[in-house]
Amino acid sequence: MRFVAEYLEDTTQLLIRFLSIPAVPGDIVQTGLYIIDGTPQIPGIIEAELVSDNIKNGEAHLHFTGYWPLPEYLDITLPDLTQQRTAVVKVIQKTSSWVDVMANQPIETITPIAPEDRRPGESANPYKAEPTIPPEYPSFWIEMSLERTDPVRLGSDMTSSPLIYVGGGEDRALSSTQKQSATDAPPYLSYAPVRLEGQFTNSLFNSDFSYSPSWPTPYFDPLPNGWSVNLADPMSMIRMQTSPVGTVLPTFTLRYRPRPNSGPSSIPPVTILTPPITNINETFQAIISPSDSNDTGRIQLKSFDDVAVSPIYNLTAGTPTVATLNIGSHTGRVKIVWDQKGDGGEQVIQIIGPCSSVYMGGHSYIPTGKTSFADVLTLNNVDYNKSWYFNKGSIRVDGTGDIPSQPYSWKLMVGVQTLFRLDSGVLTSDFMTSAPVTISSYLPSVLSYKLVWTSPTAFKLTDLTGITSVSIPFTLDITPLAGSSFPMSLEIMGYKTNEGSSIAKRWAYLPS
Image (cartoon, rainbow, N blue to C red; front, side, top):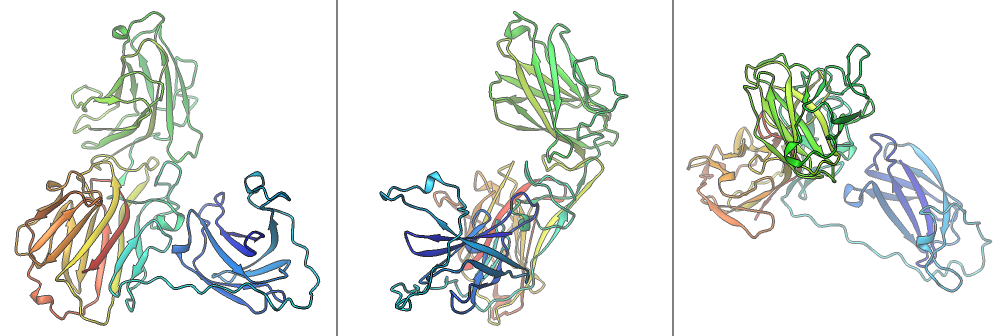
């Protein structure tokens, strides 16, 4: 983390910028108490409390007004008690003819301000600091905002134990550019998406497309060890390239050009064969990404004996597709059959992050032989020191995923009893007097939604736009909870232990 202190002449303000360093993995803007020392020019030590509400895209700002002359340096003590010294620099905002020049200079000006001699009358400064009003939170409010580095938000006078995250594995791809640093390492501390999945192990040999001198290739370019490419037309041409070692999502790029003067209907398919899968009932998965300039094409996966066959995936130029095949008992190499229907020009696809496991459907990528453990977030001992109120309220859930009917699961408990539980998309409760409800039966997408109730017998599901709202046959008898003040707990996890991949963004509970 680093600081930049800038004097803004237009507003006579001293701006301190708190900056994370993108080139340093895991470097973040720390939240907590900062001590800023600019004596003797700034009389007194300044204490500033920084919360994650102030941080946006790895940067936070602090403005001071009314100090002159300015110090040459500021000594800043961070919440972790380390210290940094930063020079105060001047940002030239206007030319002599008052033309804005901010866009024509670097973000960080490097010319320090020279301290001026003190003059009589300096104490009569016309600038006064404006008082700020702290943000107001409802008295009862539980929020998990997982796009912050400190996700927990509680109402006034509420307390809880620290948030606990377990799951994932070292080098798991949380996004196309970010890996998980270690097992049980909270992704939100690295500004990474909080991906929720069950446990799986990638058993696909050489899923990172590394080379081996002993692996033969009949083409101009080397083939990744264990992989093969078969051309139905020997007069066509193919070039191949793999991503550098250590890439978050390993990529195998194929550029295919059919023989000259071949018409669209006569272009034979290209077959890519994976290394062998030796375990039965595993599902092979890969992201197939066609080039932006590709013509119409399609992909189909087949087991080596052609018995297990996937659906046909129609490819759209520039749009990645997750292709999967459950091989059942048909072990061996998987065929990726690439069929083009273009005009005879060059066609390009990328095979990204292949893996094989007993996990069903799409999920994140981990290197061969590694295990990604089930993701679980737990917030225990949410205490209010008052009686809870459950007659009216709303729960908001924000997330994304590949399948609209597969939301991430969660459980809200009072003491040892479950007030609400969404498991595999099914809503239940220890206090329900109706049948469980599958929420995907009521909204076209339940990746993000609101559960609202105006009484224990009147529940609605609403999409986040508020346009679609539908009543659901879910009722509770919360008489046993009357006057209860037992601590609450919240648990958030993936859709199923062996299926589903979601990114959790927010979970919030607000009684009405």
